[in-house]
Image 1 (cartoon, rainbow, N blue to C red):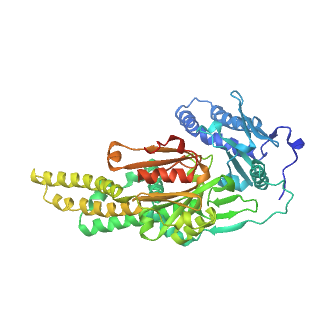
Image 2 (tube, one colour):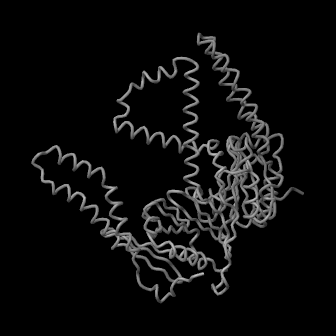
Image 3 (cartoon, rainbow, N blue to C red):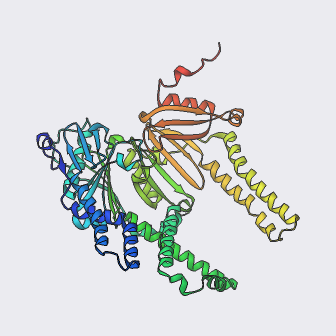
Length: 496
C-alpha cells in the first residue's frame, strides 16, 4: 500500500486540490442564490438601475469562494492532523491520531466529475457544529484513499509499521438490486418518498402547474365513487412505492462491505453522492440488527455497526447491510463479531412479571380507545364507529404477543446481547470489554414486580445498551459476569 510522505515532507501546511477553485465559487453562488434572485428582480423592476450591480452581486460570492480556497490549509505528521480555515474568524482544528475513530470519503456528483472527494475524519466529538468537523474538502480520490489507510493505521498502536505486503480486501457483501423490493416496507423509504413528493409539489406550485386545473374539483371527482376512490388510492400507493424504491437504490447503489488486510472495515455506497466509510476493527465493538415490522413479515432485516467514538447522530453513517434477506444480514453479522452466537443465539426470557407489564402497556390504551368510541356512539355519533371499536383490542393482542416474544437478553462469546421492540425490534450485541458502566433503574411499579431496567454504558452507538424489565437477580448476575469487579463492591452482602 502506498504510504503518505514522511513527516519531514508533511511539516508545512498544504492547500487542498486546485480544482476546488471551481467548486467553492459555485457553492457560494448557490448559497447566495436568494439574494442574487432579489437583485435580478429589483434590477428588472427599476428601469434606471445600473446592470453592473447584478454583475457585482455574482462577483461577491465568487470572490468569497476563491478566498475560502486560499484560507484553508491542512497538515499531517506522525502525531496529529490539523486543519486551519477562515479569513476573519480563523479556526484551527487539531486531532491526535489515536483519537481518530472513522474516516469517511464522500463525493458529490460535481466532486466525482472533477475526480475529488471529501475526507471527513471522525473523532467522537460531542459537538454538532459544522465548524468543529474535521473535513478535508476536497482531495484527489487516490490520495484520499491513501490518507484514509495511513490515518487508520497510525491511529491504531497495534498496527504494524507498514512493511508487510498488502493483503487484498475481502468482500463480504455486495448489493443485489432485487433487495430494493424491501424499500416500501421500511419507514425511511416512505419518509424519502414523502420528501420527494413535497419537493415536486413545491416545484409545481412555483411553476404555476397547480393553477392549470382545479385541485378541489379533481379531488372530488377522484373520490366521487368507491371505484374511483380505490383506483386513486392504488395510484398513490404505487407512486409512493416507486419513489421509495428509487430512494433505496440512490442511497445504496453499489453497496459493498469489505474487510482490509489490516483489519479495517470498509463500506461504500451511493449513486449520486458516493460515500466510503472505514472503521478500525478494534473500534467496532458490536452490531445492531434492526427488524422493522414490515421487514420481519417478509423475512428481512438491516445491520448497523456499533463503533466507539460515534454518537447517535453518526450511527446511520455506519451501516453494515441495507435492508436485505435476514439470512444474508445474519451471515454478515456473524462475520463481523466472529461467531454466530451474538447474532442468532437463544436469549433468556424475562419471565411472567415482565410479560404482564408488556400486556398492560398495550391492552390499557386499547381498552381506553375502545371505550371512547363506544361512548361516542352512545352519545349520538355515527353507528359506523362501532366497527372501529372492534379493532384496537385485537390489534393490541397481536402487538402484546410480539412484544413478549421479542423481550430477551443473554451472553454469547463474550458479547452482551439484548433484544426488545415490536413495531421496530432491535437486537444489540456489544463486546463485554467495551462496557464501561452499569445503570440499574427501576420505577415503583418495577420494584413491586421485582424487575429492573439494566443499562450497559458503552462508548459507541447510542452510548448505551438497554435490557428492559430484567428480573432483579438476573440483572445483577449479568452485570457481575460480563464485567467482573465493577459492581461487586456495591452489593449488600447477604445476612448471616
